[in-house]
Image (tube, rainbow, N blue to C red; front, side, top):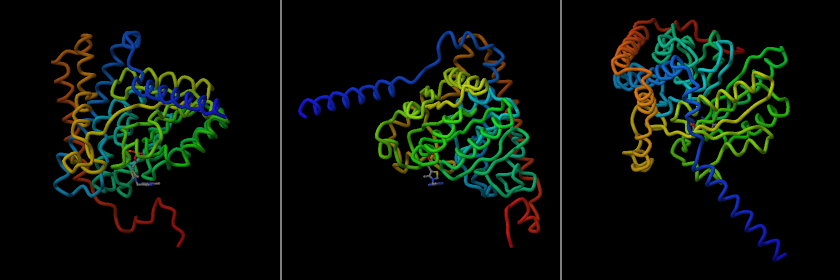
Length: 358
Ligand SMILES: Cc1ncc(C[n+]2csc(CCOP(=O)(O)OP(=O)(O)O)c2C)c(N)n1
């Protein structure tokens, strides 16, 4: 009995050490990785990251006018994940997202004019003005819908992967979700079923360490999400989510595996949201998160990191970057103009496209 107690103590100590070591050293980009990615792809990654950033900065700029009625959950600070994952996806692959979905939709190729129109509640919006920012869909680009129910999109993604598998296609599904969704039963049931059936799906956790204002340490016994994959018999990897090359490499492995029939994977991307849980402001002033923690993460800006990488490796010049920024800024102005000037849906359309049994 005494011996057993000692053994248990040592085992617990060891596992705690293991958790800390893994958590402290998420996978970063390898030199081999950077060299093996074509310059054109690196440029594309930077363009997507910058486009997502400018899209959300545009929302911050226009939001005070109060004619955009939807709540907005901004992903500023987390852009490298959407870019590094979606670059591996084909148009017919599926993504499923959450309340924080703007970046995923942009990276998967959604039209930003239709997204902005949706935020303004207009008929030309991607959900005909009835969904708002948390319910974006674009079936033509493989976006079957984002949902604000935490953990709600995960089993739907598994269903889509099951359908692709049963139809004998090589279409891959990606379920994007936050660390908060790990606390939901749907996550565990979905991981189990997908692994059992070897479904072509990637469980992509954007671990920003908070669910609303609740830190991960208050909700979960340890902070290593990737480790949980082992319990379901699938590969799990933890990467630096602000390092686009690291995300690119991990996502490539997972997407290639799923497409080749090798089954699901869990990818945990560690990152941080710069703004508050919802809305255009920062919540640090309100005391929701420690200021020093926030400041550390501001220094890990994915836009700046990718910009530096491209400049240092002479993949893009400052001049080219300026030209790209001008082009993207123009896209944003056009998207807002399109949204604002589009008509509202007619009241008679209220019950169209919704399940309604009168
Ligand atoms: C089932 C469910 N429970 C609670 C909520 C309220 N809620 C909305 S977002 C959120 C936090 C989600 O955190 P996380 O999944 O980590 O995503 P993040 O906001 O950090 O991107 C909560 C609790 C909800 N929408 N759905």
